[in-house]
Length: 325
View: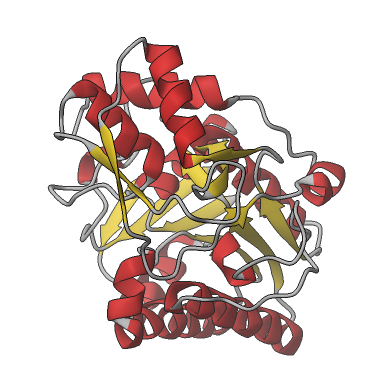
């Protein structure tokens, strides 16, 4: 395959690029580096610095490289920020997908793998969440991603495209090589496991637990955590699925739910380090529980979880102790 990965210098995008190259594919990256890192781009991938909404640049990339598949990992994704800036989120996420799909149509690129999110479900009615469960996002980020899903499906139907949509749950960890991991270019981390590990390492005074009055086993939010390498490998499987002229929507999670307090306790156990923390008020837009069924992805794509929570914590810890960028 000749694959364009948008956001391929970002956290999930860079790990996806590594797995594509390990699997023998030619990879091209489009990233404006606003949140991604040039150092995160694999040396064997070709990096184009630019924006996903630049139609002329997309035309150049598709024409010069005979792209046959797009993996779209570029999006704004911070839930509280989306509550504050909903217009920005829809402009970037939904309009950006529309421009990308138009370029794909112009150049007869038939296959797309799209990074969606568990946030499309809102407060789920069933646990674990199934792909056909009711969707009612409770924040603009989730709503923008659901809109992108509808647009991709409509474009696929109209223009003979194939798609795989992956709904991510909480992604954490780092590549076993130690070459790449999650880095935020000076911005504060917001995802739980790296925040907990920063607190354990003394890189922040303490971490905050946002609310302990949810309807969960210990009052804190419950989430499903997946290692970024397992997620990245799923994208290779998804791209191959589109090459069979097949489409589908899949949850990517571990089927296991952990509360915030459990993540803190498990980090302390695995690393043997205390995690300073406090309890503060809830954040806007946070559902109480998000845990996925991954049965569909396992059955149809051959997806499997190879890294448990302990491996997630250890790999993120090693990355933060020896960060390359």
